[in-house]
Amino acid sequence: MAILKLARMGHPVLAQRAAEVKDPLDPEIQRLINDMIDTLSDSGGVGLAAPQVHQSLRIILFSVPAGRGGDETPEIPVTALINPVIEILDDDKQTAMEACLSLPDMAGKVARAQRIRYHALGADGTPIDAQAEGFHARVLQHEIDHLDGILYPMRMADLGTFGYVDELKKR
Ligand code: NI
Image (cartoon, rainbow, N blue to C red; front, side, top):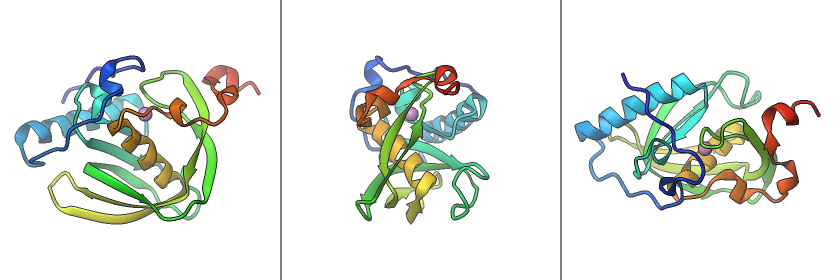
């Protein structure tokens, strides 16, 4: 078990396009995924991308905690996706607050597509082809953005909604 150091906004690893994973079953990749799971669990977040632990590789973790996704989205335990690709299924967007382990203590409103389809390899190398809606779709879009050097403030339409979580909560 290892808890990895988190990269914060401003570190160049968060601003570049991450590389495809060639062999998901490579022991180093498997160890990275396990360490990312430990790191996410320690942080209390819902998702983590490999660049956030200073590894410029196309690997993400996501989860949908009970109650977070609304009635239509069941709880999903922490799941790893390797080389994920998303396809927007409709242009319907919903705006909600987002936060990120790379911008500690901050949050802001981001519009995201409500329905997506995604393709990836699982941690065991098996292909995944699935759809996601609502919070599940939002988490995936946020994490996959990390693989392309995009942080959520770069997606914000109104920077006036960006701020420190403890200040935003007072309002
Ligand atoms: Ni993030």
